[in-house]
Length: 207
Image (cartoon, rainbow, N blue to C red; front, side, top):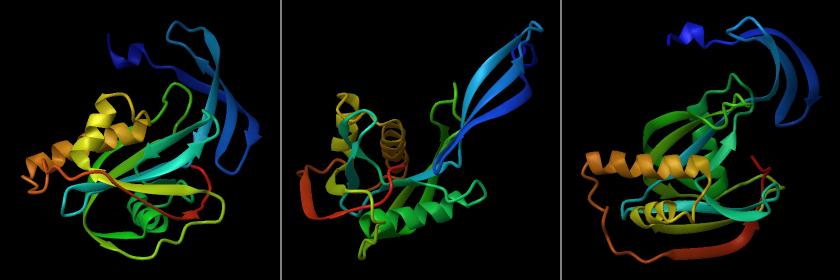
């Protein structure tokens, strides 16, 4: 079946809610068979996420409580774009430094993923960051984060075991492992142990 035979056509929209992070609309669309149907749509500026891997093959993850699911999750550093027109790469560099204090010499774009295309237009650009150097973190005032460093391969194993369940983190870690293996990254496969570190809680808005 051709794509044109599957396509729904936008007819109209009604604003339901406009917030700081999302805008909710009700759309009317024309179906391929000529009938009409409603669609509940969430509009989002988009986001950037980063897989920071140091020269020892250690990846830095952030820990935060996601109140919507009432869980603390391990995630790759990430943050929303300030506007739909913001360059995702610029946002990635900003978010990495703000959340972790890390800066990267080398960047590689891994993918741009749709998070929930059934009802939301959010896209997350995911980058691999290497050649890391540590600087002071400077997060915003209303997000509390913990940080951990672990071998990338161990983080991937946690993904495969179902212990890491955040979508962007699953995609980012698996793609980063594949990309670094293709580059013969020397530190992969080391038996380094998990090194968790804690400090004063950092904060910024949940994304």
